[in-house]
Structure formats: C-alpha cells, structure tokens
Length: 519
Image 1 (cartoon, rainbow, N blue to C red):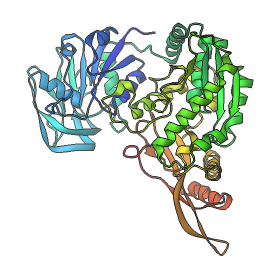
Image 2: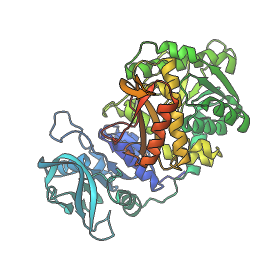
Image 3: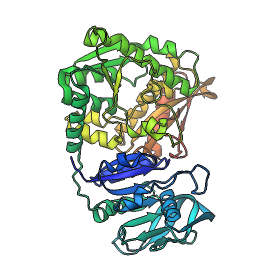
Image 4: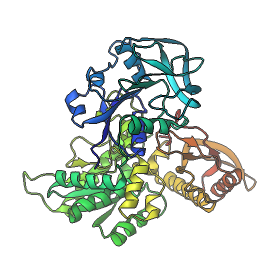
C-alpha cells in the first residue's frame, strides 16, 4: 500500500467525494476529512498535499467553515476548489465579494500555464457553481484562469505550492478536469501511481482480519455487485468465519434469487443460507406510501430477519460473548446521500436502508469494507477477486429493491406487474447491445392511472416509466439516448404483455437535478 497520500478537507460540498474519486483515478491514495477534523488526525496520514473542497457557504456567513491554520503552515502543496479558493483568498489577505453575475452550470474559462497545468494556455468548458468571487488577489498570487464573468477564475502562489480554481474539475462536465487533478497530485505533490485494486484488496484484507479476529461474520447478499464484492472480500480475509444470508424479500428482479444461490453456493463455495421472507416484507409495507418510511421499514425488517438467522448461522452465543459482524456493501454514494455521521455538513438527500435505515438496537457490529469506494472501484475489486463477469457488471439495484421503484403502496400485484415490465426493459436493452452502455436501467411503476384503448375497449390502468442513465461515478448522471426503435419495442411489449399497464413514458432528467432512482 502506498504511503503517498492526499488529504481532502470537506467543507460540505455534494461533490467532495468526487474529488477523492478523481485522485484515486490517478492511482493515488487519499482520505477525506470534515474540515474541522483536529490537525493531529489529518496530519497523521502524512499527506503529500491537501485539497480544499467546495461548499454551500459564503466566507462571510455567520458560522461558516473557516480555513484551519495548519493548512498553509503544513508546508505541503494546497489546491482550493470553489469555496476552497475563497477560503485561501480570504485567509491570506485577498478579497472575496458577492459576484455581480453568479455562475451555475456550464461555462468557458481560459486556463494559463502554471504548476497544475503545464500544457500551455487552454480554453476549457468547465462546471461552475458559485455566488461569491475573488475580487483581489492575496499577496504573492497571480491569476491563472479567467472569463468575462469571473476575471479571477484561478490563482497561484507557485513558490509556496498554493493553487486555487473557481470551477469544479472533479465533475464530469469539466473538460480535462481529471488531468488537472492528476497534474496536482503527481507533478506538484510528487505522488506516484501505485494505488491499485490489488493494493486495495491487500489493505482491506489486513484491516478486516485485525477488526474481526475470531468473531463470526454474516453478510447479506442482495443480488447486486456491492454485496457480492463485500462477501468475496470478507471471505478472502476470514474464510469459513463468513456465512452469507440471502433474504428473498419478494422485491428482487426476475430470477435474481436463483442466480445468487447458484453463484455463491455452487460456484464460489461460500456458506449460504437462503430464507424466503416475502410475506414478512410485504406485510411491513402494507399501506405505506412515503419513500423514507419504506426504506426505514425495509431496513429494520432486514435486520430482524438477519437476527432470526444468527443462531442457525453461528450457533448460540454464550452470555457476554462478542457480537457477530454484519457485513454490508455500503458505498460512498450511499453515505453521501444519507448524510452519514462523517458527512454532517452535507445536505441529506435520502435514507439508504444500509446507512440510515438500520435499527439502533440491532444485535450486530457493522463491517463495511467498501464504505469509501465508488461503484467502478468495487467492480474492479470484484474482477480482481475472481467474481464472474456477469455478476461484476450486473446493473445496480437498490437495497430496498422494487419497493422504491413501485411508487405508492407496495402490493404483491403491483410488484409482479413492475417485475415483468422491468424484465422486458432489460431484455430488450440486452438484445440491442446496450446493457454495458447504460450504467443503470429499470422500470418504475407510477401511482397514477391513464385512460387507454385496447381491443376496442376502454382501459384505465397504471403508467410505467423507463429510466436509463449513463455515468462514471453515480454522483452525476445523464439520461441515456436509447434509439427510438428500442424504446418502441420496450413500450409495445410492456403494454401487450403486462396486464394493468397501458402507458409507457421515458425519463429524460439528468442527475442533478433528479436522482437516479425515483424514490
């Protein structure tokens, strides 16, 4: 594992973990810290550089996050992004003012040659999101980027290794943003490029063994890549101490339950217990329409079912003995959107059943080896661990399953209707060779009815929406441009083959402003 590390200070931006993702794409290890983390904790990793994230505040707001004194005094290179730039300017004697013309969304900017950009002046399409701007440079700094709206779009004090930019290089919308971050961590900070899936596995296995000791581990398999990679990684670390439990919630995609059993029990030789709790989950969801309540009930029911399997999986525990671990495939986006405990300054978007929906009195200690990884990183680790390609590249599926794609009340009839429509959607995308080109695709059953005509008769049935997106990191996403003829086949088949649906729509909303899932 590399000892060359970058520290990222999080000032509350929804894009903070994307910065971490871009650093890792450059094969450099990094850790993300809340901005007010004690200096000792941050400097304990001996960072080769520090990146300051954006944030929702103005430097003049009451109670706004401030720049910790040690950042500049540490003697390592610093890169400030958006609010991070304002903090540097404000702390070092520059002037930050409310912008006369705010910039939100795409913009053009000219970036000059500097320590973080050695390729010569370049006109770049970038992503902006700011209401304040730097009006006067701090002593020792020069402007390195500008456009008509933002004359000081970047600044640098190269003698001290201090750099800042107004735009967001971490988002996909910024042209060559990955290169800029790579320039900073490699050329300015002097980091190598040796943080790889093999290194992640090696470090994770060591940490799991140290944490678990001789205690049993139970891992819930959902059918998705996150839980599958978690199971394979934990099994690599502790072997037969692991028991996987597959809970059939009745909310899985078509034929997914049998695929899970065949892969883990038969192909990988991992101990697996399968329990059918469909009636239990559907009963818990009866009459529930609020999406947050759905997630919380599913999360609580999931843990209770697990608890009922503990004795069967690990035997009766003597009084006072250590609790088993519950291994979960929690990823970075789950933590971000649920506002996990290390993300208190960020806005909560939704509760994930494996982050914010678990009961406080559960009888397990949590083990989350993928908690600070993104989906593509998890896939790379899964491939390195020898998981089947079909499993590694399986379309993502939310923990609460079809319950959060069945808007309104979840009944067995509506779930079966949705399951059939979803299967048709994926089948037609597969036939068209579009499954690997769409990062996530699925059907949604809406709680509305529409009038239709079928066989000379009037119908008044439910509406199905198709959602398909493309993304690299699942933090931002664009709607997939599926050919009209493929959409036509999907629509025709759903209306003809699925009783109770007479209208199909296609969702063309990006993330943001929408989320990928509807609930």
